Image (cartoon, rainbow, N blue to C red; front, side, top):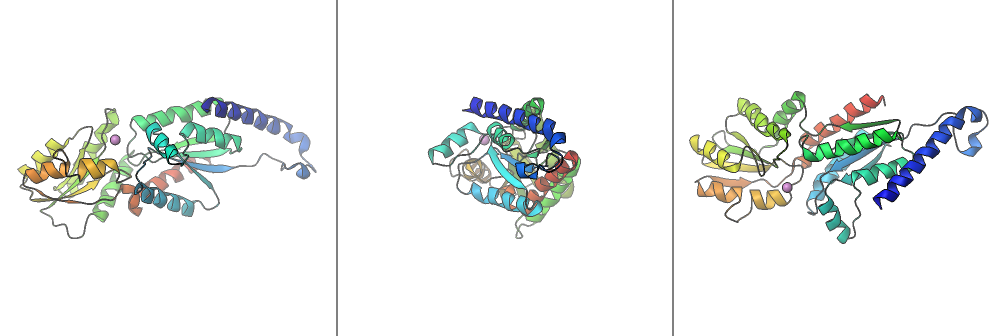
Length: 302
Ligand code: CO
């Protein structure tokens, strides 16, 4: 099926080239044929998330969709999920979601000329780089006039500063200075994992009781526990640092099983208050992603 899409993409590309070549001959009085004097710009945005099969994740994705539509009225916005497992799960529920490659082939078929592919990942890790390879593949095909990949949430020092400000703005109002705020990032084997410790350093410059741990990378839960104990923390607000408060937030962070962060901290004498909201549910974080679409639009000259 994917091959079929690629083939159709190539066919669309050839058609596009024919149209471009024949334009000078059609310059006058060709409107009836459905072409203007010049090949028109057709601008689109492809939003790419890891994906989630969790119904509550839709709140996050709806927030992003609404804010992107408000920032770019009249521009087509499409979605793709990078996770095969999630797409297969959703297909079983009758919800068809494209992979980035299929979504881009479709947009090529529909003669989009300028496309921003916006990563909705948190860091430029393995999934972001898979997406970059797909985008580079389409660039090599040459079908789009411009194709630009937007940065993930946390890519530059300016992003880090914006994230520190966003976090300060969304922590629960009742939290006191001697209570901890623990962000749970995903974590990865990819070198971009270093962003999590870098974020914790910059957060602690603002507030020494802010912590950033990860489920699958460094810093891990034991390190965060040891740091909180060393500081005599008695209460912690646990917040997912992932776009969606899905499986990891519900189970690894706030679950009742003994290996959850809530259980590990509680057993260490730290009272836990989980906050079940993904970053994409907060305007302050979504604005950072939307800003990255703006940068990509500028890079395309649109
Ligand atoms: Co995971």
